[in-house]
Amino acid sequence: MTPMPDQMLAEPATANLATLFAPCTTPHADPMGALVAALDALGLTSTEQMTWKDYDRIMRAIEPSIGSGHTLRHFDYTHTATLQAGTVERLRKDYTIRLAYTEWGSPLRPTLLCLGGIANAARRFDYLARALSRDHHVLCLDWAGRGRSGWLAEQSDYSFDSNVAQVLALIRHKRLSRVTLLGSSLGGCVAMRVAAEAPEVVDRLILNDIGPFIPMERRSRRAESVARHYVFRKPAQLFHRAGAAQKNDGPVDDTVLLHNSFHQTRWSEENGGRVYRHDIRALQNYREGAAQDHDQWDDWQRIDCPVLLVHGMLTDALLDSTIERMLAKPRVGVVHVPLVGHTPTLSDPLHIGALRNWLNGPDGWPRESTVGWTPGAERILFR
Image 1 (tube, helix red, strand yellow):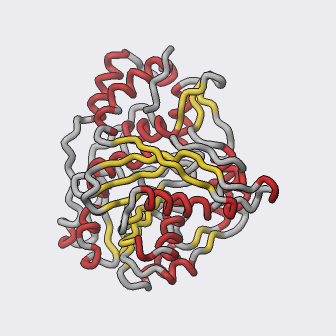
Image 2 (cartoon, rainbow, N blue to C red):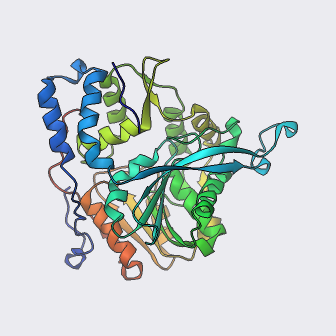
């Protein structure tokens, strides 16, 4: 075989919020229709029958209608000796790796910089970025050691401070004066630090199911799950693993899960299957630091810009007590999303529409609101 190149429905809380959550329509073709047509053409009756050649044909059918419109770019990031505290002193020296990011929309528009979680790839933001690129210049960063970015030299180099440095390096590289930061999980934690330490470059924050506090129990459980080497020797194994890992993703359809799991993995000839597209040392380093609570309340107190918090109502990472404390700060609003756990995929038109409208007028946003799901999501493969 030739592997493919890796190139609930609920009403708003109050009636007058209807316009805030208007769907963000997009002109692209229907990816679910493309998936159904591809499956029909293959004549498969079970995912167990599917080969990687079948998977290749399916991904070629649906990917053009999801990721079209972006440009994959790279820039040189210098990892300085000051960020190498875990390296023996005689080996500490500045070195450079390439970081990858996707770019959507015109640089003349306001910039939205999207930052993913510990094991996410930048392409996870494709649905959001494509829709918002009509009015925004959208950049989505692959962390060092993830996605299409290069790897750092030492496991200990994958630190929180390194993530902060990578964001600031991209802002400098693009010569951006002001940005809105959108961060999911780890990306939200990094966004809060950047906003606290460099407020002159941050206009607004969108925090996707993350706050200044994460309990140790949740961090440890997540770290043990992701800090392992997985090999998927047939598509059914990938579907099972992705389905189990994303069981709280909410009523998204197969194309969302296919797209995200495809860009989070790559073909490995050495392993005879697909493996995660990341340096396992990055996640093992996270596991070492997950034996304690994550506390960023000091950073939070220094943040003065408008903040929108997206809350997956089944999450175990963002506590109700954390949300209440965050809402005590002026210009902070929360959108509750039912039927979903940690970090909603931000692929549903209603969710994208809510973010678009907040970006257009954050100061008029309600303190708390709820947005549901677009009806009709289908699951054929990920059950």
